[in-house]
Length: 233
Ligand SMILES: O=c1ccn([C@@H]2O[C@H](COP(=O)(O)O)[C@@H](O)[C@H]2O)c(=O)[nH]1
Image (cartoon, rainbow, N blue to C red; front, top):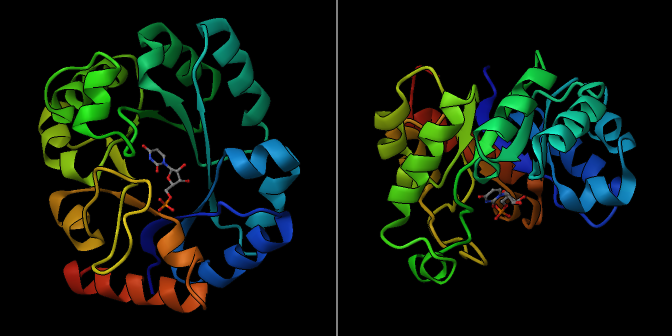
């Protein structure tokens, strides 16, 4: 059976917990995601620990954001870990995104548009007036023009971003909340079914799975729900 297009965010306080979650969810999902919490605490070793024997795809979510030379060097430094996906911030500008893409042949560089935790009011406070969709579309076009093969946006913007960048770009959506799940610190959210139906390629889901009593069962249930949305997947 094909694994669901879900990246489980392994935002764990320690390596043992992350590896346990990874082993539980890997039979059901295509990808596991390592973010700042784990990587800053444990460094490169974390990748092998969560990849385990299954060889599941690892998404390294470091959201690099610096001058192009520094981002290129940081990208080369993590490229040897062979993550399937590496994130950078689109707001770093086209030269920075291009530097990451060129430094990591074989790795999908995903540009984060506007963090899913930011609301309309938050965006206004940082000087981005107008609906989030406008900024997301603008940053998406910038990043793809600079060579990014994937974008991170909220599930609420998938349709608009797809219209902006066309079919060949992988759209990755955090801010996914199953019906009844707490929104927590996310602001621009939608259900997994809606995200997939709108054309997202990979859904990032963390706490709704890892906070469950049985993360493996939670991942299996979400995977089954997505199969009902797209019966051919
Ligand atoms: O815009 C973004 C970019 C990345 N993330 C990351 O996704 C997960 C979401 O976890 P939940 O527990 O499902 O909220 C987390 O690791 C973030 O760092 C994001 O949420 N929004």
